[in-house]
Length: 554
Image (cartoon, rainbow, N blue to C red; front, side, top):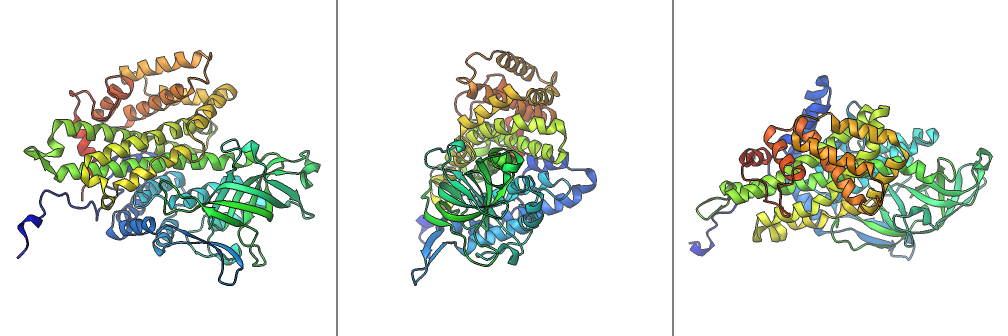
């Protein structure tokens, strides 16, 4: 007979066995909005299949296993030969294999490719976030490689393949390849122009040997890497370039099957992102192939940086969505003080506030992906400002959302089995990766000062919603006043970029979200009727509808 004190009551069932995509109304509506009508059924089916896998017990177990068994560095084999290999738990390979087969490294060669890939990335990241790092860099390498058509012809089919093959072999012998990158060095951090890694030209055109150290090399088990190094001046001098910071493709295994010199000194012991390997790498006579012209490394790699910054937005949106889904699910089943938590006015206010943040991030991320698909001059100008502004703001909102969502589960959320601590540990990553907050803010200032067409495109986008909400109209007016005053602009850059992001989110929600969502967002984020913590929305709003919209039905 069971001990009566061990009877389990008033516990929410696990949020498992559901379609992560279809249960996310904001995401599904955004996809329908940005995908051509003739593609909608195909895309819905594709994303729903991915969503069902992401919400399955199997995928959730893979995520747990990959994080409980982090990668291990094997610098030498048993005989003392240098091998520099990273060993992963099988769950890591299963996650990567499924994501690659789902097309999460291929946005460039199919209709509505960026929207469907962005939605898939947002869905699948909710199963496990760490393996999104190599997915993101592989996807983002394509535009950088396209600066060299000969290189792109060889590598692009490998990078956009739907086949994942683990292990180090010549890329030509594999059905698909993954890429990492190495830009950060100890002395420079985000200031990549301070890099000291050297590249000496070889006799063959475009070939160099690299010597230096990369302080952060992302996904060091990948098949190839885009790295920055100072070229000493090589064969491109005839084109008018005599060295300087240059982009290089560094393969792990050379065409003849020998290992390139790629010495992994150690793996980083990180706060979160523990399933993924980040390492310090030494180059010493390492072979590399120049990508683009000498001295144009930043210009060559900038499109890769922009694409990975968008993935930072999407990754943060995914973490926020999963946190909100878990919090609303828990409150739907948990009773306290005489009723369900979800029906308590104060808890409902907290959940609605979190849901607003999540929906605003999702809506903005998919709008940016749609701009990539459109690929017009106007949309490219819009992205120039919108991407760093979104990256700045959305990634910064992720940590407070994750923390508050965890608190909604109380003590249950503080234990590892809930999955909430993993979300919280992961939440600061995207704010740091690809340039921290100050870097994004300064990038926005740079665009404002040098690219007037970018500001015009941004203002045209937010102005589309003018007249629909008086609080949005007032916020746009205040933003224009701030933009007109350039005195001391660097010191207040964060404030300016925050306002730009909020006005953009407000404009999108006023146009596309249900009235109760847009009303609550504008009242709080733009109208000032909001406190310093979540759960401080005006009580007169339709918060029940906002919470119900965010609920993931199982």
